[in-house]
Length: 354
Image (cartoon, rainbow, N blue to C red):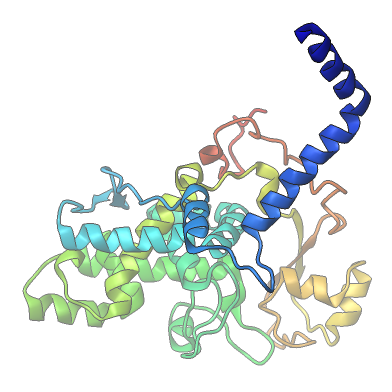
């Protein structure tokens, strides 16, 4: 009797299996929708929402590296004021994902240009992060009129040899502006003999830092009481150095193809006046937009040059369509299988292997 019942059940399931599976799936879908969506008549309960939130949404604290340093000058991270200040900047910049992701991308394009200039001038490599936090590696203008990657004001630009005229503003020339910034760093180091104070002075000025050192009778940045912006400045540098140089540690899983590549250019030496940059661009088989993208220091639609000064104009070596349909570009597969913390590399490194 039992066997007959069992056999009948099996026969029933075999005949109606498709309908039974469909019914179970429908029940599951309806239950899921009922629990996790709102309707006009029934809202998700507080208890259900809290359970779902706690199971799904995770926020992690940040570990403070024990070897934290700026330009090989150790950070006194055991000091609770210092520790909590660096932790603040690490948390803000780690979890400001949209902004920090863009900085990762831009750093891959611009750091290989900035780094050799710093090295040539005997400036520590960590100073590249000043350009990153000053302008986010974009040609912005501050309310005070500071411009370019290094946010240089007009009077400072002139004193360090940058040309600012009707047609030209070399604060937007990354190479020349970096050279000017190096001159400032050297001068500041002669005064302070300490790279951390040099970095702070880029925000507050050499005079401002010197005055506070004397007034407060201390000899280092970490013991200084400063305004809010300068008090956070070096900690922001330290945070960005950490996050950009070790992305995976802070949750940024970046393939080489996710980062902006350095676009190869060719240089054109100009020692005459160009009356119409649009026509000049067309003659170079590009357009004005491309010309200004690669040479943002050209401020108008002409280049006056009565003194026969030599200017270097850069244009792309090849077509600007460097990406394929999948977002890949030449060399984008390099290091793709390695730890993403190694993705930010020096373009001159000839030891790179796939």
